[in-house]
Image (cartoon, rainbow, N blue to C red; front, side, top):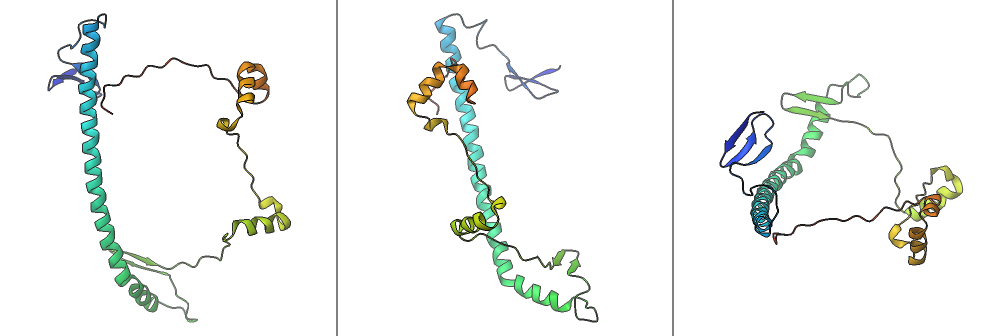
Length: 190
């Protein structure tokens, strides 16, 4: 593993992973208030650098999204202006069989293809309630019913019982997750 220094930071030359600062910010572990404050100060700086990069990314992303919108607007205008005419012209000029049907439904050029496809008719749902009522009477196997337990809607009395009786909760299809201690560090850089 070859470590290289770049702008005061150490990086693994093979994997590109960060290997720490070139000069240690904290000697040894954190065993005093000074070292704890040193850690938090540097963490705040690193978090500020991260947030600055995120802000840069968002700005670049917003600019590119604007450019994409402009490009899409030009393409949409182009299609609105010429697509129907192109379709009519290509359809009329496709080679035909003796019965008048096209020999092929695709016109191929170096710049793209214009293809025609006939899709089969299909059914769509326009009024869900009426369609469900019809299907319940005429084809019940086409109905899908989904049920889900919303833990947040379990009444407090039932929730307390489940929490006090993990074995019973298990029998009823629930699991009780133990509480965990978590640590959060805030440097005021939200």
